[in-house]
Length: 355
Image 1 (cartoon, helix red, strand yellow):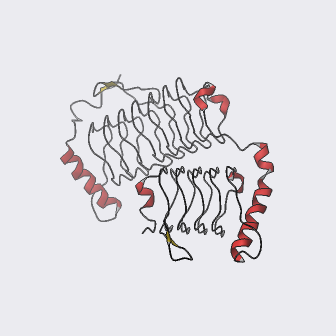
Image 2: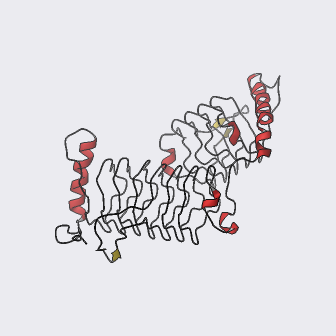
Image 3: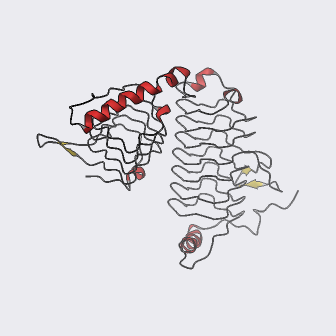
């Protein structure tokens, strides 16, 4: 057994000292001088790293028990075998993360983006105790962790210990669970397309409402759905002289994949399934999308004035440059975009056009 790296040479950071290091790091990544943060094996328990640009910070083996990384940019951050127990990692963004061997026991990761992350087992060349929590040298510990509504596409959970993990509403397209321990795990309303369901080994009640691969029945309707939308597009383009308005309530639109640039003003598509679909630069003024599942959809540069998103699922949807203002109707009245009850975070709308 090697010496515990959290011994006398790695004292607990103060918030003041950490702020100083992170300010210098943010100058470094902005090419304004500063210095890259080297925090490998550092004790950062309970400290605030929220809403920071932590790009390229080395946190290998660091102790972050109870720390907050809420909303931070974790691009190219090394968290190999870090201890994130009871941490707040909600809304953090970290794709292709090396999270092998991390301990997430009791952590909150709701709405975080961790696409293509590696959460398999990992090993550090030591064992010891970090703030009362034993270092697990051989496996990724995620007992009781909240992954609800996370974007976890392509994540590798192979051999990870995920006892009691909450994947409710998570986007898990292509995730790998081979040999993962999933006792008491919940996948309610999760998106499990491209996942080997045999690897999950969970009871049926743990999969309540989960979406799996498109059924053959839905695939057979793809050409029919596209024809209906073509008629709607003709109706809009001709001012109502040709084609007809479409009503696609409760349809599964995933096979269409992209409606980018389409003119779909007034489209009725309540409670449709349109996860990860591309609506970029489309015209959806006054469309009725109430209750629709639009998680991960791309609405960048789309005209969404007067759209009803009431009670829609919009986690991880992209609204960059989208127009969410009110729509002026022919009688002079204004129709506001309706987000009442929608599952969406304020940060998703920061780059959208709003009244």
